[in-house]
Amino acid sequence: MRKVSLLLGVLGFVLIANGQSRLRVIPENQLVVESDPRLFNWKTVLNPITNLPRYAYGKPVAIEGVSYRDKALAVAQKLGLSVSNLRYKGTFTGRSGKTYVNFIQVVNDSIEVMFSRASFRFNREGKLFAVAMDVYPLQPTNKIIPLSESELEALNPVQDAKVQIGDLKVLPILRDDSYDLRYVYELHIKRQYPPLYIYRLVDAQTGEVLYEQDRILDATTFTTTVYSNGPSIGATASRPLARATVNDGGNPYITSKSGTINATLSSNFTISLNGPRVTVYDYNSGNPFVVS
Image (tube, rainbow, N blue to C red; front, top):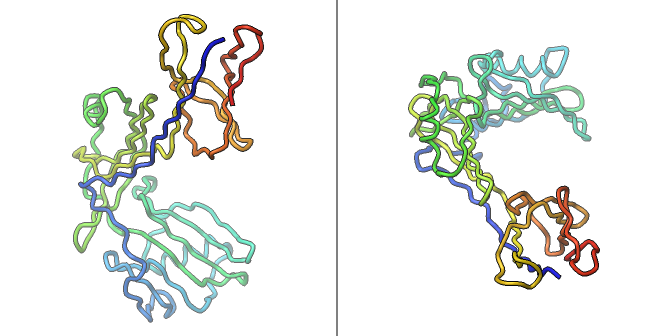
């Protein structure tokens, strides 16, 4: 009989904020302005960098317009926002009857401004009662320069990983008491084994790394120790347990070629030595061999 033992290793979640990035979240407890004429004398949490309300709420107000989307755009224009700089993301009505109309900010009619939002909230009578937004009414300060193959590879921090270019986006960056908008390229840096997935944002003009995140949330690696020269003969060797079925609480997972699954497992799971590409049989009986 082939001797099989299982070893379990866990790779943790790591979030990296690159030191070159000065992006930060403006606290919600900024100065509350009791009276803002742009928002019907509502209480307003003002963003001191953009001079726009991050959050505003007050007595519900009737807004002209046929649809909720029309009403939301009318309020956006009242706040001084250009309709062409907002991309509609959808309208949602909850069980309470409140309706949320959501947008994100774009530049040049199509390029998304990351971490942006504009949400307009209506009560069941169709009146506006709150606005939440993070928008930046400036244009990007850098140029868009295409990345060559050599420049792309130079941005790869791991020699045996592959780097793929994603979408062109705009990143807001806080600089003292002001901010910049910068065109950035998304980079996806991946390796199958050991598992690696680094997400980067690099300046579209200079190539400077402005943001970085490790996107391996939780990876579990399974290995097996086998007699490679036959049943109980010679030395053992450690091999990845590839294409095996892992069942955790009724949720089946299939390990990759390198023996990994990207999932958080409970303490009670079973591993079956069969999968979509191979079934392991008992050497003596010929029956499928299952370890739990």
